[in-house]
Amino acid sequence: MQVEKLWDELRKVLDENQILRNEPMKRHTTFQAGGPADWYLLPRAGQLAPLLALLRETNTEITVIGNGSNLLVGDGGIRGAVIEIGKSMQEVSVSGRAIRAQAGAILGSVVSKACQNGLTGMEFAAGIPGSVGGAMVMNAGAYGGEMKDVVAKVKVLTPRGDILELGADEMEFGYRRSIVAEKGYVVLEAEFVLTPGEKEEIKSKMEELRKQRISKQPIEYPSAGSTFKRPEGYFAGKLIMDCGLSGFSVGGAQVSEKHCGFVINRGGTAADVLSVISHVQQKVKERFGVELETEVKLVGEFL
Ligand SMILES: Cc1cc2nc3c(=O)[nH]c(=O)nc-3n(C[C@H](O)[C@H](O)[C@H](O)COP(=O)(O)OP(=O)(O)OC[C@H]3O[C@@H](n4cnc5c(N)ncnc54)[C@H](O)[C@@H]3O)c2cc1C
Image (cartoon, rainbow, N blue to C red; front, side, top):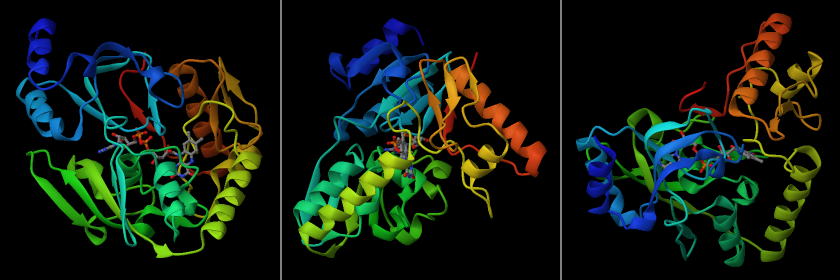
């Protein structure tokens, strides 16, 4: 569809300041890499269903993102529309032991709210820089905890435009996966149920985990966290280190010397990052016969 025509259609659902054209994805990903999205849209919760219907009717490709902390977007960018479920959907409320959070809320803010209300069980997620929506897709986890341990219900929008409330058992949570991506759902909200605890203890647990993260992970550089999934029976970082690839770089992308499981971006392109990833995969396969699968999701056009 012509640009002007699609603009007019989008304006029926969104305000002008919710529609960005040719928006560089490096502004919206923690890797700080990636070319332009044709359309970058920032709907509020109530606008999502009509927006998705409109994009389908106009045959516009749709990519949903949260905080962009698990994405490598190609330098060619993303055709069609990127929908950010982020800043305009961040409400978090507490009722007894239950916390309801809109999909755009950052996990850290949910954990802070839990702490303020003396609720424990979610401290593991404080330092994961993703949104609630992204965390439901990835079953995000750290330090022995994962979303499946604390989620009670998830509200999603189906590709047909219906709203469903799924129980945790219907989410098919697994290692860095859930049913969401497979079904093409858009996460709207999640409810967490936690346990009453001591505020001071919750705070000190969060602080302890924060210190561990700072000491072990290269969070001072742009990245998308662990680049690779943990292969069964191994640790990706150790395999990479044992291949002598600590510090290996292409252009501005590098295997972190602090933690070899992280590829970091020191001012390079998505192509640089992808070259490092491919080289690491090839070397680990040659030396140990292990296929490293990316945890990071590759999106858009790679030049
Ligand atoms: C420094 C750093 C540390 C990290 N540490 C951890 C860690 O300890 N544990 C861990 O698990 N991860 C970690 N990550 C990775 C990342 O934060 C998680 O995978 C997080 O869950 C991704 O959330 P997001 O909102 O950024 O999702 P995005 O990266 O924006 O998207 C991820 C996927 O979810 C989909 N998606 C996002 N929102 C929605 C929605 N509302 N509805 C439907 N689909 C959606 C996207 O299409 C995409 O497929 C780390 C990342 C960084 C940069």
